[in-house]
Amino acid sequence: MEDNLVSLRESHQQSTTSWRKNPHRLLTVEVVIFLYITGILLEIPVIQQYLYYKAKQELKINETKGNDTVCNPYYKNSSEYSTDEMVQKRASRYILLVNIALTVPAMLTACFLGTWSDEKGRKGPMIVTSIGSSLASLTFLLAIYWNLPIYVFMIASSLSGLGGYYPTMVLAILAYVADTSQPDSRAMRLGILEAIAFVCGTVVYFSSGVWIKNYGYESVYLVILTVHLLNLVYVVIFLPESLPPELKKNNAVFSVSSVKNIVLVYFKKRPGRWVLFMLLICTVLVFLASFVIQTLLVLYGKRAPLCWESSIIGYFLGTWLFSKAIGAVVGISLCSRLGISNFGAIQLGVFFLMGNLLMIGLSRTTLEMFLSNVLAFFTGVPQPCIRAEMSRLVNKEEQGALFAILASLESLCNFSSQLIFNPLYTWTVTELTGEFVAGITFFINAGLLLIPVVLIGVVQYHRPGKRKEFSPLVDDENPVS
Image 1 (tube, rainbow, N blue to C red):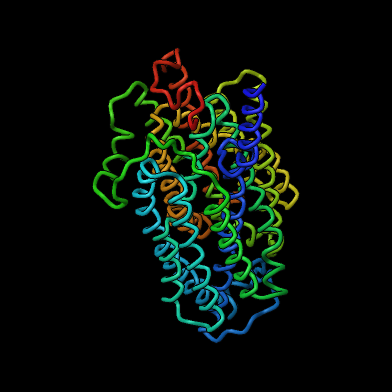
Image 2: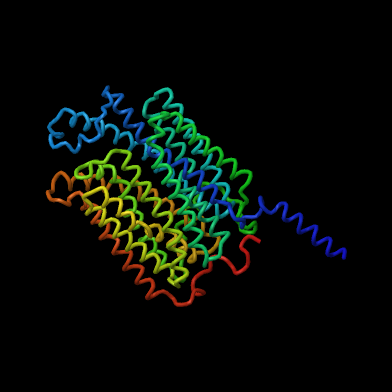
């Protein structure tokens, strides 16, 4: 009887403290990705629009009410054309400088913090990233309020980059999921996180333009700063650590061993190492094909025959991301129920992405463009499945290093998409003639997606048949217990 009372008392004590200390509870990093992704996605269109406004201000050009001048057949011979050219060149230069100040330090920091998360825990990189983003948001807010020069915006971006920015937060979240989930359910968990990010993007694209117009840039940055501070408080106080204590080491954050560990993830001799490289190539090509839509949509939508206003561009991107969000969860769940492997799900999603790109490139009306979002439904499936399969191939103490490379590649692909496809698109529409020349860049990316389809087919045909031949991610028991 006394033993029963003691066990009941212990279970009651565990239940009262389980929520804050249990990394297997219902909501953990889902809250983190919702808050953080909302903050940075809201920041992207705001800072771009402000830099365009700043370029006009510096060139002493008054705002015009016309939005459709680019569709005017006499536009290139008008004074408005040369004025817009000057504004776009200066604004593009500002955006490029701010992106470089953000992307380069972010990728370097992610490499160090990725391996550090394998040695000290996942919360540390999340805290560092939240602090960096909060300081950057505060600096942006002050720079906008006092109309400070462009180098202040670069300093703000570098603060966020030195904190790790998106690559570090993503790698820490993905490693956290790898710590707390079984391999068979990991793709679904990662798909849910991907869907949350897409839903955040949907809300941002639908609301940011109207918000800026009615309340100004400062009010938006106050919200961004608040979101990052809330995220910091949640991670510090309410998020439990997922890395088992026995895996923690007392190593320095910035050391040669950190870079060495990342290199070893991909070059260490292990069963299925070649599969790791194949999946890495696939993820780069899928990233580039996905980012080209966001990169070129403003230019593609503004020109004839679409002649879209900014609000319609926002509605399209919001609808596109919402379709990906629902499709990521539904697609992975459906493939699981039908017995389709993660590799088959990757191929299915890539085929839908190819169709999405082709239909966008061929669309001549607004209705056709929005109908192309139907084909975007399963385009959110490949990345969670690729990450889940890659995480199976490495040991549990290598998850942070693995996802550090993936997160850095995502940022690099986003940045490279602007450097590669913007000039290519400009060349096609100015130097070539034809009804569908503006869609050539989309067609090229759709063709490149044949490579991951073939590579995944090779992996399926030649990979070892038994899962145990790969290095396991976690043991059968609870990885945190």
